[in-house]
Length: 88
Image 1 (tube, helix red, strand yellow):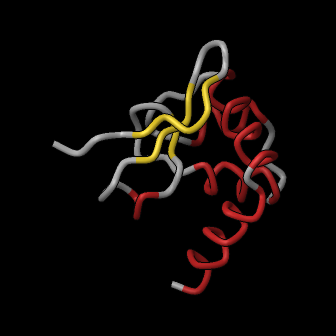
Image 2 (cartoon, rainbow, N blue to C red):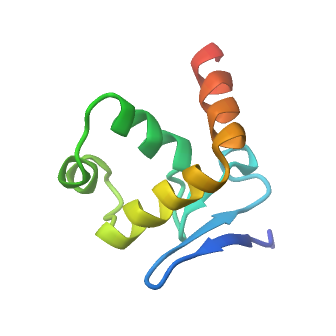
């Protein structure tokens, strides 16, 4: 059983890292949606409403808020994950 580590909690959502899931990158609560993917979509012009429609796993507005809060607090980490993904 892989243990998740909660790395940021907001009032209605959280971000977690789980070894072996998405390379251990920070993901939305109980999903395989990495924070960096939401950040990239946002940089490409997606609105919050777009993000809530784009992802197969239903996200909430609180999830988007948590992802952006995590990015603001961990900008270097997330930007490195984006860079590595773009190189892959």
